[in-house]
Image (cartoon, rainbow, N blue to C red):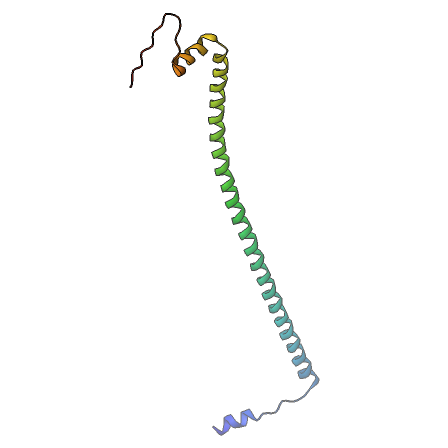
Length: 123
């Protein structure tokens, strides 16, 4: 135990080499600390940037998906409207025919032609 105490009381010599070595060690330690701080700051910025980029991509993909669903719905509606347009164009052609107009008038307004008798049957 007394040998351990004697070893703790050893005095270092102050030479130019030892002071220069200590200074170099201190400079290296400071450089490492600075490097670690810069790397930590850069890592934080990278994480924040990655978060914003990923959130932007996710929100844009949701918007694109919604737009695709809306586009598909509108395409179905357009197809229905084209069918209706064809039907209505056919009706326009038919309404230019006097016989068709007479048929509709007899059906809807219970009109009759000469010599024709109408019977009302309740269905």
